[in-house]
Image (tube, rainbow, N blue to C red; front, side, top):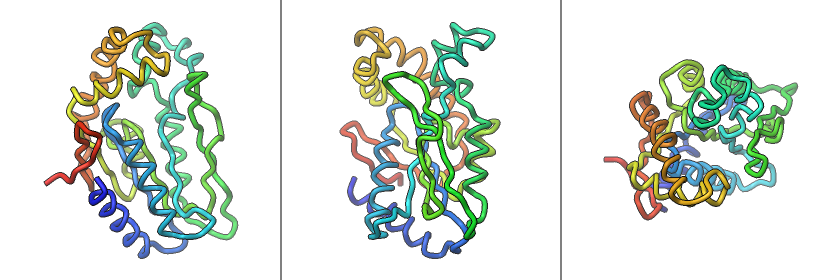
Length: 234
């Protein structure tokens, strides 16, 4: 794991040195639910900031979770029961809003550039929180993370085209399921392991199949192993 992460961080840092001061380096890390993409994204972000070695961070991390539609919005959809049951599917996210943010972050930086804001997700309330994540003008490396960031459909494809690099964390579905079940129980998404496995099979892995089958070509393919480590794809 260490070797792979170090390689990604060092290569990203070297690439960043060639980025003009008026521009940002944008990296999108995607994968199926339970792939380990969040852990990779947060680790890479923190290590880039450590390399920068200054009090003001150079790298910002933006999870896609904040772009979940609210539960109220899901209830307003034509089939609210299905919308709630399939929460986590691509259609239950606000793709246009995410695309708008990506385009805003892509704009050239200048002395008049202002701090931008992205939503976060409150897992206790199970709803997004507006303007919770700051993207300061000094944040010149932005690491996005989410299931659909290399999906070759609709606004997700357009957002992917805004990025400088796409990374994908690959994992077998059985390993992903074993990771998701205790998470669902702990988060209160399912009352027990049996119901959690039902949700994994009927929602998470259904979404995962779409993510894998409709994936765009990526710049980095990272294997997430059963013990939680990452390994390079030969």
